[in-house]
Image 1 (cartoon, rainbow, N blue to C red):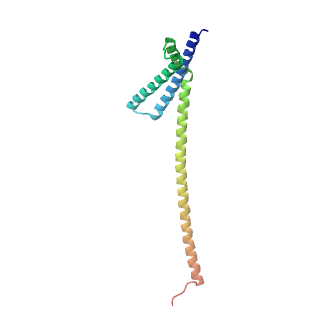
Image 2: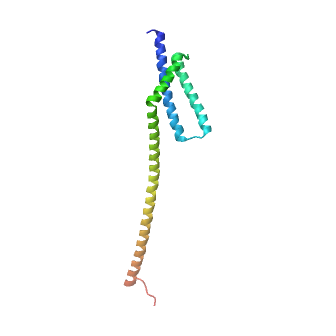
Image 3: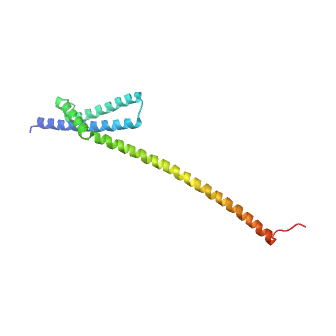
Length: 158
């Protein structure tokens, strides 16, 4: 292969990989936006920031591998990489991210409510223990008073 064809194939491979990376970042951004659920204004602002970031990333890819030249086959390669990612892996990545997020919410909820339930049980148990201890002390005081009275440990006033 000549140098130009080889460099064009490398440029095509780079743009296909940039399309795949863009698809993955786009799906992660969609899941993050779904999880946070910002308002319309924040969604618009974050969309602009995201696409500026992606444009900068793709420009850096193109700058590094084709000295900034944009050819039609590079646009096709980028679209092909993005489409291949979305068709083959996109739904699995989104589903995996959503299920991971839901599982983490479930674990966090279980930890919080489990901790809260555990502390409530401990509080109830300690209150029950304290009531029983007070009742036992009352019985012992009464028992000791009866013993003192029977054995005449206390002085009787005349």
